[in-house]
Length: 253
Figure 1 (cartoon, one colour):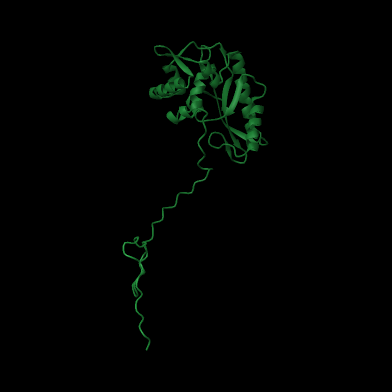
Figure 2 (cartoon, rainbow, N blue to C red):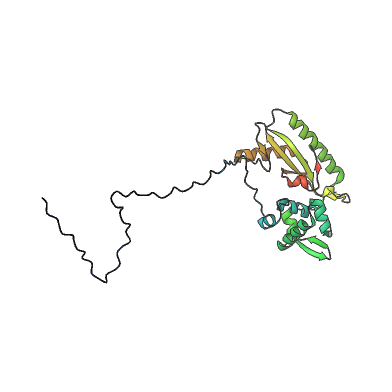
């Protein structure tokens, strides 16, 4: 029969450092319980950049982030462009042009003032500063109404001919014109801005939500708009955005 061995005595001296925290091993015949499984988070819905486009970047984030989404910075700046040639303008002019509430108009003016684009003129009146004219792209009004109306009529014809041409790369689905030519008491006006929404013949949309997916496509859009404009100096064509349909405008299609 084998002899029993005496248990080994610990050599740790009293008063020594406390033993390390070691998890005791389970006793014989004792079932080890596993930790309860963690609940997996529910799978997120499948989202692609095609059905949820990224928000458009604004050159003036303070203006667009503080204002409501219905009033992008570009819309407010389009109003400033229209004020070129006016001695002053009122809050009523702003809200009637952009079709916004009085609260939105007050917030927009406060932000434009903070940017240095407008300044108070007198009670209830404002003026657009030189910085405001520069950032909005305002130019001295130099076109008469007859020239502008003739240019818009010619553009309408080119839009219709383009949509009939199956060999064209794009189909034009929206065309809205806006600018100071809509102010009836102006004898001289600036070039008319025209928002154009394009649809590729393969079905993809080039506009605010469709966007362009490569530098080659972006170049194709730029070239197409340039050709559509032709040599008409009173016109300035740009990709369509929804705010253009909210503010005062003239539909060309």
